[in-house]
Image (cartoon, rainbow, N blue to C red):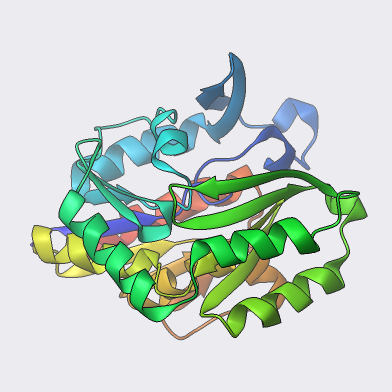
Length: 269
């Protein structure tokens, strides 16, 4: 039976230049491979060693990129290795099969959201009204499923984020601060539900996962084994569980370590 590896992408396997955390002397910095270009500019990287590890992992397991990104944002990433048959986008709102959204799955998700939480329009309206234009740079809606703000972190009132989280909790939504983005996501919209569906389809008897943010919590807890890096929301809050291994590495070297851990677990199964 195959092993299924569902991994978050941004700040877990791939890193923007601001998130690389290259703290070593310049001459000892790892060689980097650009895996995403946006508007003709390089945007995301992994080490060349990580690229080879991901290629090996794609040959040894069912690798499922698992992201809060929209389908459009995900499809501009050019990961090394075999093209994944499955991908999870929009925090579980879409399962892509060979790059195309599974319409039955998406219909199930939207029905569940309509039944269990406040509508997106209400949350979007609250964000537009309550967020301070001093630190908000963009208001965005992702695939008609959730909303997020792009902010200036140094100007952001973190107490406002906490107040938003309480407001959202009472409406069946959750709030996550990741880098320069504040996400408001319906609670039933989860990466773990999509991972379980792909495990069912593939017959996987071992599930492995990695992630760095609050929105990865359910994914890590649902997997047989999970890893989190030494940076990100989960590290900041000290999150852990018996099935989750906490890694000390931060930045792009954490992505390399996570892939080594995945390969070791798959080969040892």
